[in-house]
Image (cartoon, rainbow, N blue to C red; front, side):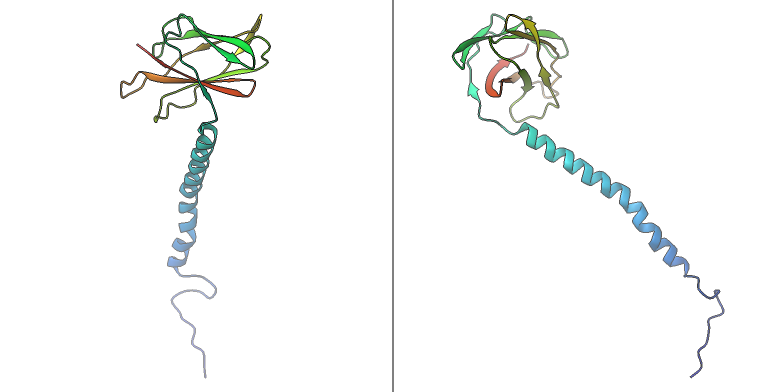
Length: 161
């Protein structure tokens, strides 16, 4: 049996369709990697925003200050001004004996982005930070302050104007 070579293309070359198939994975790979990266970011956000065991603290007026007990000492939380979206205010926590204080501001059931603040020591057991709340596009004004003092978690609900 005699083998007949095709004369329409040189020996060893692939048809044009093969080149298109080879380029296909290169067009799909960047969007696929982007989807994987976004899914990883979403999972990390869920992991970091998962609710921790927190003690609820009633705070009728954060401008006047709120007090609660933390490991046998009295902690006082204070806002320097009534919180308004996009207007910075000073947030302070007086926690004698504490070494680390973090605050996070979120709305229940609504992702407000990364609003975590590391409060800085100001002396005499007081920790402070300048805080700016984002605008809620739905017009809601109910917030929850998630406060962490040396690993202990507290929640303080409040409203903006």
